[in-house]
Length: 174
Image 1 (cartoon, rainbow, N blue to C red):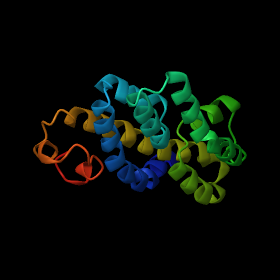
Image 2: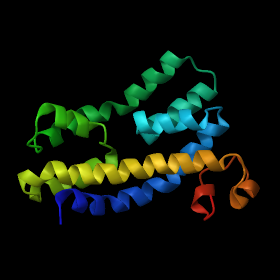
Image 3: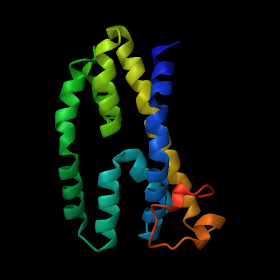
Image 4: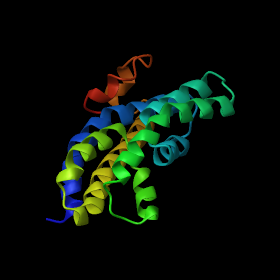
């Protein structure tokens, strides 16, 4: 089995965990006035649940864009510690390592920290890429699902009170 494919398989638990939260983000983003495209682009470009929920909430409350972005950047400063500790274990050119940095989340970091030391060096980039693709695809796909379901067309979400968005995706049908 290729290292990328093994990474995809190892990323499945992360991907499954992202689905309810990603769907919730899509719902909340639409409720706060984001379009489906804006919600999806947020997940594609930011790829940080904490920062995305914060950004949507702050902008929805009328916070100036610069302050909202500044707070989101502050939330993600932990990645300044994550990145270098993993980069030391990735035998790849700096551009490859920088590309892999976009897919680094708390969960991916935890799995990679435990696994990279036992992976042969020549398989590490492929394996980490697989884990990140599984996580990223799940997050973005779940955001799209939540955004599309935010119009109330889902029978379950139609009857669920909008002030309780998190439990909604846990019900099948959203």
